[in-house]
Image: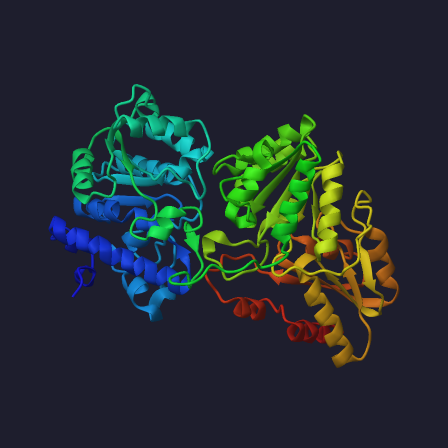
Length: 582
């Protein structure tokens, strides 16, 4: 029997010897590798935090003592020690346990957490509420060094230092974000590592924290000693631990960026060959070509270069024309605005689920100042993702801010034309929703003048029903048109709107002549989205409008086919709804 098999709750950890804890660490790593190899997930962060998690549960008393995990990239070992090991050792139950902190699963989790730099703020709130109620327990926040580059982390530290009561912040310093860290703070972390925590410059002491350092953050004995020292402390304290990201799996240690998160099937497999041309590859080619032409282009990411395949080779080629701002999407938007205002050509790439972090900056710093930056939104659309990483909300968030032009290309040629126009123009902040899925090419160059805003493209002229299919759902629009022809015996009109931020009044008005129904298809939330703009246009007319997209809800790892059925996003269900209206 393995040691992990004996662990059913944190109390069981307290009964282990150090030797057994080290055996347990190996059991946990084996389980992590097995799960991620089977269903995918975060690998390097979880492998590196195993000993620290064991020591936390040995010293503290969860759930009375409350643990808050930043991003919760590193929550797998915690889950295994709190009654959820079945989600890591039994393949049939892997999908029962999410990859992030989740109170619905266990009393040992206190928040749903999937975005970065939040743990200190959340923990500060827990600690303050405890103090107001005159309760007595430890509040422990775990935050990675990469997360320290996010603005909320600074705000949280600043406020936590003023508590004058117990809050313990464990800084998991593995010298990495998802990719290498960027920013001045990391010079101080390096000084602290090099001096075994004794450097005169110490940002944590400077703002008011008690501080201790553990050089071997994968040594369970050293960690237990450090955590015992701060347990029940009456002042805010930082425990800075130096860990090895990917520990226990050599490929993850050697290539920390690639193995931060991984798809299944990586064990004993060969590296996949080149996937050919993709939307990410043509984006990189576009940016490199501008750089080689001595243009003032600058590609920007917020610590997630892998999402856009901005790999080390690309970053090296871009050189000074590339900035990773750290996990600081808010700063990235304002930074891009400043670059654009001073004549540079910023192209910022963001994942859809991180856009909500930038709302104030999009509105005030970018749109209000009408700075002509280009922002590329990746992975936008309905998916089977975890509830913390849904990409369905970007259209309502972005398309309703004045001055912003939000474009939805349906194919490679449109995407390239939109990129070229956005890069060259100086009138608007332009967002482009990079198509999700495989690259679609028409083989014909797009010669559209995108400076004529909100001009839709009539792809096929028909009657009775008009289909307005945006972006990656244009292909669904083509399927619906064919299904209408087959089932109802007439040709429907098919329109590619391309603009998500406005309506083509002339085209919509013309549809009134020989159409009874207009349907809109968008790969995202309907509420506040593109389709509602069309509905509003026809509000005082006899035209019937049906909007198809996702509901306003947080879904959690729901299969995509199930969601498409729920939202009537199949050609059969859409035509059924059209028949009922007709």
